[in-house]
Amino acid sequence: MTGIGSRANRLRPPPTLNETERTIFIEIINSTNPQHFVRSDLPLLVRYCEAHALCEQAANELKAGGAVIGGRPSPWLAVAEKSNRNVVALSMRLRLSPQARQPNNPSRKAAAGVSAYELMEGDDDTR
Image (cartoon, rainbow, N blue to C red; front, side, top):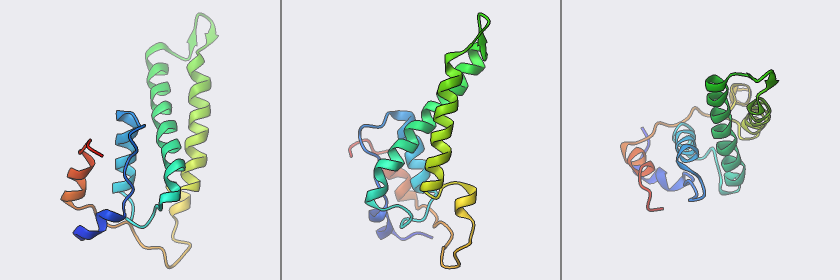
């Protein structure tokens, strides 16, 4: 169980993120150990959340409109490919991918649970 004092160690979503990106940010922060990210990780984590949200948007557009429009490839194919590539690269750098999480380092500990206070805090838009 995570103590109340541990929430001070977690990064906060910056106000520049839209709702989808902010949700992704909070899910990532709450699913990792409080010490997993440090302040200097914030720019990469923000780019990851933006790329992830864009990748989801592209996938939805492709589902709705199809991969071929009027005999030509949908422009969303390029968006999906590039944003997916960014998600994969950043997930490795941020140690979010399955490969990066492998316990090849015996000192790496499993992610700590999230307290109810931290979950409620994620819904607070006053930051």
